[in-house]
Image (tube, rainbow, N blue to C red; front, side, top):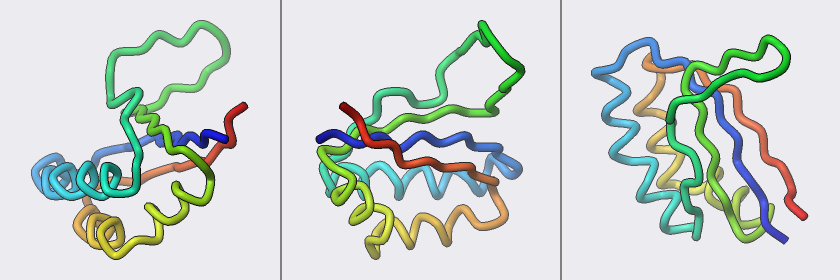
Length: 95
């Protein structure tokens, strides 16, 4: 069953965040993930949620998504983004 990583990213240091952007996609790809949304334009049509930079990544399962998140490759990306962005991240099981 598919799983979706939903991320709201508040970039605080764009120059430093570029390093994270180089590392994260390779880790996502290695664990079978694919970007569905990657910081595109949005319009709030209900409520007052205002994500800074919204990203959605699809994985084939919760297990694959967790393997990605806990992988050495993504942990390196997390270290690279330290001080460059604040993230809110949800892992959601699909149907």
